[in-house]
Image 1 (cartoon, rainbow, N blue to C red):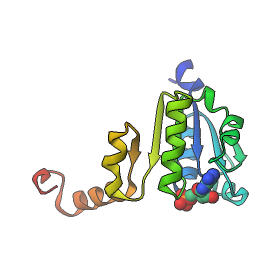
Image 2: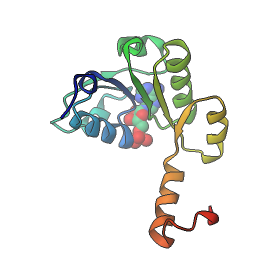
Image 3: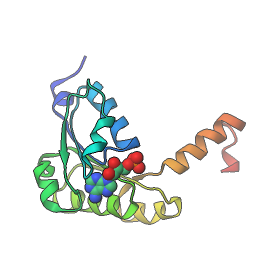
Image 4: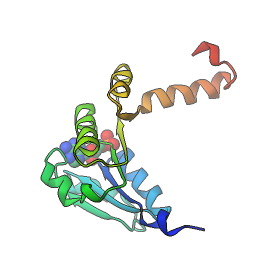
Length: 147
Ligand code: AMP
């Protein structure tokens, strides 16, 4: 059963590309309140017909775009654009200016992950996750000492 608290959680996803659109679909299916921002209107074609959230065509680097998406009311911001610097910048704005409780930035370059973790920015690096999933698939999960 979904509680009222879960239903009302407000999530902003920046970037409606391969990752952002898929995440938007999953969260929408989980009955979350979702707004997806993308600077390219065509990107919204990736959303399925049953997506129940909102879309905003805007450049998320501009504070005005984030305000239009009501970042000041967001419970979660996920920055999934194809640019690490953009994602980290949006994450920092969400965290330090608007005090969004949960902020996650997609990161392409694995070597930068530690730096951002030190800045207290939660990151998700698909390259690392994919490598770990492949390793688990090939040699199993038990071999932690090979990490
Ligand atoms: P993908 O790499 O397929 O997940 O796509 C990344 C998405 O991020 C694309 O749809 C881009 O148009 C979008 N994007 C990149 N920079 C920005 C930005 N500054 N504001 C909004 N969307 C962006």
